[in-house]
Image (cartoon, rainbow, N blue to C red; front, side):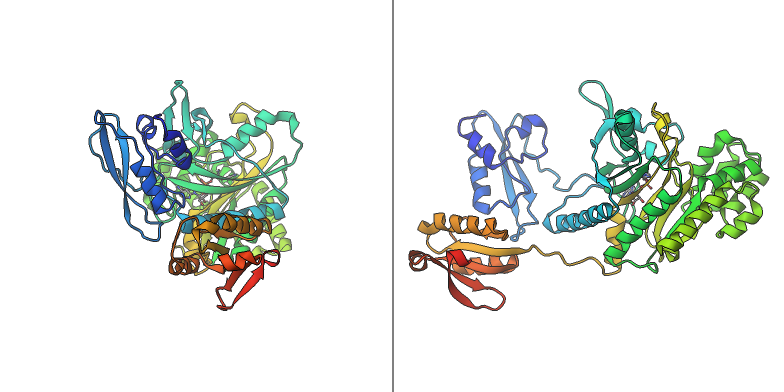
Length: 501
Ligand code: HAM
């Protein structure tokens, strides 16, 4: 790095995501609240040499108030002029401040609910070994994997979900963790999806999982956690409902129709497409596995049932029904019975579920599933560990935000600053830093004006950032150990002693 560049690199730590040979020489800053002069400083200080070409890229700083375009200037190791695509890759999102406030608010709600239920937070790497996600069941999720070979020749993948990582960690911990485990996590997942409303190629998921409990008390508690979140967000049981069933229903139905057990996962994946695919396509798909059409029809009749009593009449194996009845009885005692309904067609598209499964939907039917989960008692052994009873759910960030927008429930989340501190005279900038620091120690959120600006600009800026008070550092007040304080909502002004701020 040329002399003098180190200081700039410190000022501009976020080098953009260019190929490393390019990024190394890039002196620009994209997403931090950098002021225009600093940006200019970054650009004009780029070392240029006649032997090297310069690259100009136009970047839209739309999250800045001026919303203008900035020219990014950098050295180029042999590339022609190039305008980069300023959009993130298809299906992925940037989170400028206004979007980030929504995300943080949502995650805070996820965390609050998880802690109300005494769950502990965990995390895993976004990049995992590809083998963790390879299942031969023909699930969509496996086909949508973002996988590649790393520089060491290892097959790796961006996680499409969090459950396999959780299972991996449980296996790794072995007997070191005491059961039951109640863990939650919030993480980014990647799936090469066909994009629809609320479905994208990256999304964040909130997961809560219980390991070590065989009883349906665990599923009942997890569904209640989701209901608690909905209520916290202002969503009612007339907005959202849970469809609940058990994979054991399908298992029993298949047994009754003499369909081979080895077709179970394939049948689950096909049944999961009911509603997304035409019924005759579903029939054809099942028949193509060698299931006689008569059995296909019986099976589809059973999965079309919408009450447990109807199911009781047609199903000879009552095991699944007992569990479902227990779950509904618990829901009544928790007080969320009106949120859940039985629907035999809910089987879930992931291969590892073994028992109760559930999904939450908006009752207007406009959106895809808001969340989904279930029991997966045999996942650990498929990864080489010892099985433990387990259940959990995944709740995405995208569909819920769509629903909240739809219902007018997304709160206004403006940037909130308590004080803006401004030195009227440049010579008083150090005093302004002292005042800002004193206020911050008291817990005030303080925006210190870092550059020479006109008072008119400071007022406009204060309005834009929703500051409550303007603290002006002026020579005469400072001599008396005071600052000028203006309450920006009442417009009242007074001189206040530093200690009384
Ligand atoms: P899943 O149904 O595949 O389950 O995903 C759970 C939730 O993640 C969905 O209901 C949806 O809210 C969100 N989601 C999934 N894919 C996308 C996407 N492409 N774009 C936006 N949101 C999406 C699982 O992932 C299981 N591992 C959940 C689980 C945890 N089961 C037990 N524990």
